[in-house]
Length: 82
Image 1: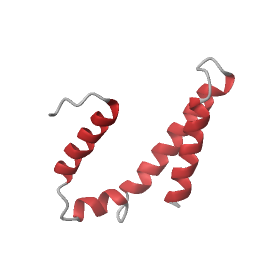
Image 2: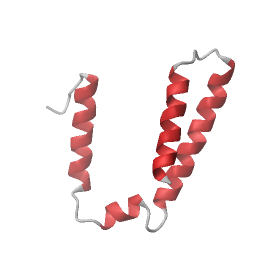
Image 3: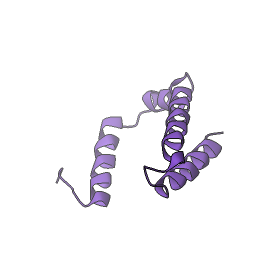
Image 4: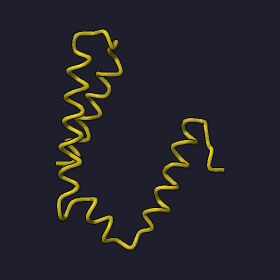
């Protein structure tokens, strides 16, 4: 199910990127995307969802967060964590 939801979100994001904010469909597409993401996150927050599994794992979630932030900044060309 998550694969379908992710693909749907990516498709909608692609549509939104191709629109001008003044286009008639822009606001409605952003609203639909927002609702899709909220629904998906709510599912992942449930017992047995991805968030619960991550918390129960032995992963260093704080360290992973730092690594993700560093990579995001690298991709954006603005590394500030050094």
